Length: 155
Image 1 (cartoon, helix red, strand yellow):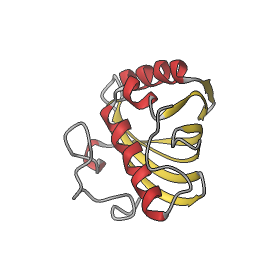
Image 2: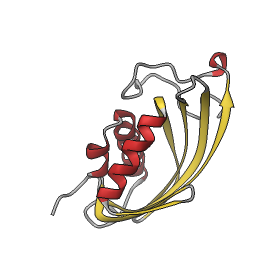
Image 3: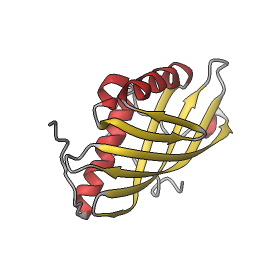
Image 4: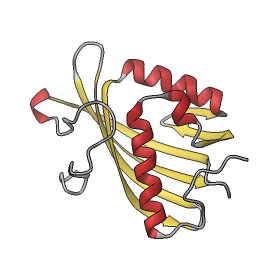
């Protein structure tokens, strides 16, 4: 069985690492790579979309990142216990018409004993923003370590 450290039960340091690893994965915009962080039978609620299994997750992410261009995400630990982590996040993206958005949300995660996420519940709201209001300007990919987080940005 594949393991994905850190493994539960989580310490604060483990939870912070797990959040950063998830952020890095999503910023890669690689659906196949990202899906490997989830159990084969993972269950998701993303807004009003319900998914089961890695295949559905991969298809969902592929469609998401083809629509949400210039995607850049920041996640922040909200709370944790044993095998669960709650995060808040924001991401900026551009639609096919060139309009910019900042999406805000919260996620609740539950992990199996191997550190794979078996459940993900996400609530997300989109806010149209002007190009001048963008805050996430790093090159596509991993957020630089010295880039401010959500709290530092006042988000």
